[in-house]
Length: 133
Image 1 (cartoon, rainbow, N blue to C red):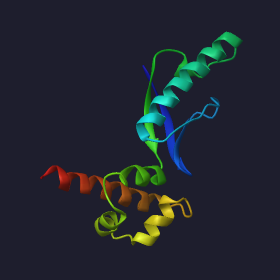
Image 2 (cartoon, rainbow, N blue to C red):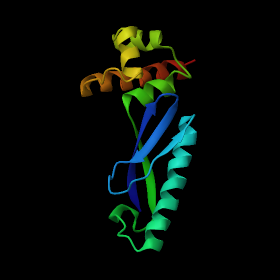
Image 3 (tube, rainbow, N blue to C red):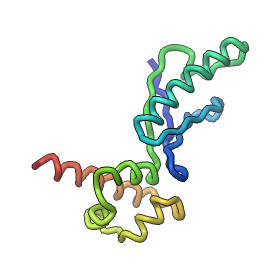
Image 4 (cartoon, helix red, strand yellow):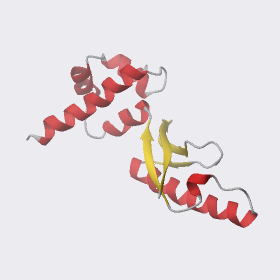
C-alpha cells in the first residue's frame, strides 16, 4: 500500500487540500480539518476513477491501494490549533510574539523551517501539558 502525501493549507475561511504529486490536479476544501481530509480523499478517488475511464496514465502512487498522509502548513496547523489553544499560549510556549504568529496564521509571512518546527513543537508541548491534567 502506497502513501500519498496530501498538503493541507488555510485559505480565507477554509482548509484546502491537494496531493503533493502535481501530476494529479485535484483539490478539495472544507470548513474543518476533518471535512477537508474526507473531501480530498473522496475527490481523489473520483478523479482517479475518471482518469482510468479516460485511459489517462495513473501516477504510480495511485495504481494500487493507497492511504493518505496529511501534511499541514504552519498556517493550517495554527488555524486548527486555534480551536483548542490561544495564540497567547502558543507565544508563551514558543517565544514567538503573538503579532508574528498572527502574520504566519494569516499567510502574510511564511516562517522559516526552524520557526515552523518551533510552532509545531509548541503546539505539541501544550498538548502534553494538557494531557497531564
